Structures are given as C-alpha cells and as structure tokens.
Amino acid sequence: MHIQFLYMPFLSARERAFLESVSQMGYCNPFLPERVELERAVLGPEFVEGEPVWSRRSEDRPRANAWRIAERVGDLLERLRPRLAGGAGAGERDLALYEDAALLLLYQRYYPKFLQASFAEGESSARWRFYRDFLQDWRRLFHIEGVSFPTGHDPRHTFACFRQIQRAFEQVFQDIIGGSMPAARLRASIWQSIFTHDMRRYRRTLYARMGEFATLITGPSGTGKELVARAIAQSRYAPFDADRLAFPGEEAAAFFPINISALSPTLVESELFGHRRGAFTGAVADRKGWLETCPELGSVFLDELGDLDPAIQVKLLRVIETRTFHPVGDTAGRQFRGKLITATNRDLPAAMRKGQFREDLYYRLCSDQVTTPSLAEQLADSPGLLGELIVYMARRVAGAEAEELAGEVAEWIDRNLGAAYPWPGNFRELEQCVKNVLIRRNYRPTGAANENPLEEFARDACAGRLTADALLRRYVTLVYSQTKSYEETARRLAMDRRTVKSKVERALLAKLQNNAI
Image 1 (cartoon, helix red, strand yellow):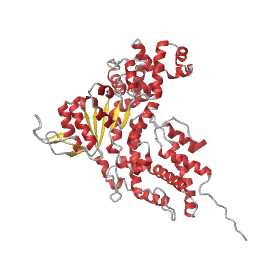
Image 2 (image 1 turned 120 degrees about the vertical axis):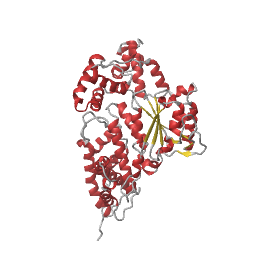
Image 3 (image 1 turned 90 degrees about the vertical axis):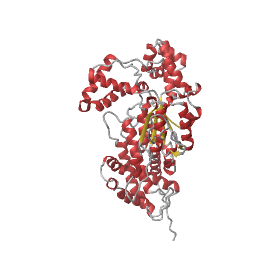
C-alpha cells in the first residue's frame, strides 16, 4: 500500500502577494504617494479613500487604513506561526516576508505606547517599562523552534529603531503641514535625510553613521528652513538600554543654532569654535564653542551660511573633513562628535563663481540637501492650503479665538490681496499678516521681495532647484503670460490645450504681469 503526501506550500499565492505588498509598504517613504498606493494594494476593496499623501490637515483625521492593515497582518501571522512550528517548508524569501510583516505588526501595536511615553513625565524606567511586553510579543513571533530567520533582528535595536521612527514621524508630520505635493516632497526629503532612501540598510549599519553626513538646507527666506533643521536634529537614533529601560542618549540630542548674519565674524568664530582667554579683546575667560559643547547625538545648525566669512569657511571645511577643530587662540585640537546642519537662501553656485564661497566647502556640505518650496509654489499646487495655514497660525497666536480669527484673516486676504498674491515673504509673511489682522485688522505688504520673476526662474533652473514638473509649470506660465491664450501657448509648446491650462501657475502669472513682462 502506497501513501502519497501532498506538498502544501508555506504561503498560498494570495498570501504571498499580500505579504509582498506589506513588505514594500513597511519600508517605503511614508510621505510619498507610494505609501497610499501600497495601502490600497494591501487592503483592496477595504481601502478607505482619502488624501493622496499623508499630511496633517487643519482638522486631524485618523489614519484608519494603517490600523486595518495591522489587523489583517495579525490574523495572517496567527495562521502562519503554527505552519512554521509544524515544519512547513518555508524558503528564505518566505521567512523574510514573515519577518517584515511581524515587524510592521509590532510597530503598529506599540505605536500608541511610544507616543504616550513621549509626553509622560517621571522616571525613564517607568515610561519605557512596556519594553517587557514588547519582548514577550517578540519572542512569540520570532522564537519558533526549528526556525532560523534570515535577518536575525535584535529586539533592543528594533525597539530603538521603532522609537526613532515614531519620533521622526511626529516631528515631520506635525510641523511640516500642507496637503500639496511640494509639501509632501519636502516631508519625504526630510525623511530621507534622517533614514536615507533605504531603511533596510539604515537599520543594518547606517543608524550609527548618519551624524557624519552634513545636511544643507536651501530655499527662499521665510520657508521654514530652521523648522526642517530641528526636525532632522531631533529625530536621530538613540540606543536603548534594556537593563535600565532608558534611552540615555535622547536627553543629549541638543540643538545649537547660530545665525551667522546676526553676528560679526569674530563672534561667529567664538560661538562656533570657542576661544581661550586673551585670544581677542573682550575674551576675559576660556569659552567652549558649540562644536565642543555639542554631544554625539546633538546637532549644530548654521543659518545664513552664505554670509560666512571666508576665513571661517576654511576652518569649517577642516571640521567636516577631519571632525577636528581648534578654539581661537589655542593650539590643542578638539573633536566634533555631533551632526552639522546648514541653511541658506543665497545662490551658493553663483557665490562660488564670484569667489565669495569656497567650492570645496560647498561639495562637502551638499552630500545631503533639502530644498524648501516657496509658499507660492505650494499654493499653485493646492490653493486650499492657504486656509489650512491660516487656521494653523491662528491657533498658535490666538488660542481659543483661532477659528474666528482665521475667518477674519481669510476674508481680509480675499478682499484686499486676492488669490493671486505671490506672498514674497513666504510663510513668515503670512504669519505676520495673521498677527497684523489680529491686532490692527489690517496688513500692508512691504513689497521688498518683489524680485524679477524671470531672474528668479533662471537662477532656480541653473542651480538645479526645480523639479521637472515645477520647471514645466513655470515655463508654460511664462509663455502664457506673453500670448494671453491657451491655444497659442499650446501651439508654441506642442502641448494639449487642457494640459497648458492645468500647468499655469496663477501666483507666478500675477508676478509676471505685475512686472510688465
């Protein structure tokens, strides 16, 4: 008598397709449209339609899809664990997919606890006591007799990564608001500055090395470059001490900003490098600079980098190349252990051509670059963003009176400035407008930043700061401002009339018309 055993694969085709989508989703950039599309692929008909990107709206809306996915992942893993324990033939790829799904489930399950611990007071060991529960779940999911997972994740390191992801997500999600694609690209760019584009590689090795890479933030004045710098600085990886139930490094993740344009070169040098007593007039005692004070998980932020004195540029170049420096008036070297973040609204390539900024320093700084979009660029993509920003700023300055104030500001802007107003001062100008309307029920634009839009377009294009879509939008708008006709513009550019109409930026068109171009 012959008995035939039917081979049962560890995963069905449907289960494997589901886990492949979950795996991609777990490691993608959460602020790009790709994340929402992968949610749709995972949930199918159960997907709840919403915005095309993750963003914080003026009315905070729950992200129901993420929790639905976690429920489905949990149900599937409950079915897969007995199969693994029973000796089902799972290949390396199958086990890797199981690992990715288990990690996503654990992150979603403990995300509320991480968030609660962020705001909790008291002893650190009490805040992070839930690590013990996390460890029990970890063992249940990964300690399966006879199964050796390919990645071999460490629970303490994973716990630390989860904490960093939660902290970084909250920083970026809460502070960089707006549902426009330029805002979404900015959030995604910040996320890459923190984790790189490959989170698997980051988890394996780069988590301990990101402080070695300087970050350069460029963009017009008033677009939130310091906000971006703080988000990056306050989202760094801190190891978890499982014995003490603490993240001791988080307390040392300090942020040291220096506004170069507000200080003389001597003071900038002293603030940055420190000085010895008697090094210059007024140096009555030894002083440590921010480079020496900054701990390993801290960050030094140099704002208005384009105004840096050439002599200090040489010293800063040495800091980046060797991670060492000398205080003013001292021959003994010091080590810089933190991360360097810089920002400027100046055209550094143009400054290099004029000999005002060192080329070698620029190329040391731009290994990681973030560009902040103008308010006009964001409003051209998403006109409704203006109302959202007004509500956000009104809540900051008026508290319980925010809703009423936001209505007054929106009405005043619509009546006096109109939808085509280009907001040359960007977010900073809008904030001042909100405050002016609050105090005086009026706002008078200075017009100081009314730069020739053709020169601005040429400079941004030559500096490589425009995306392909932004380049097309601006060029279409330029041609339309000359022809005053969608049909003629379409003929000149060999494009469809409807495409031309969709690409015209009203804010830029108003600037072009105001400059009589």
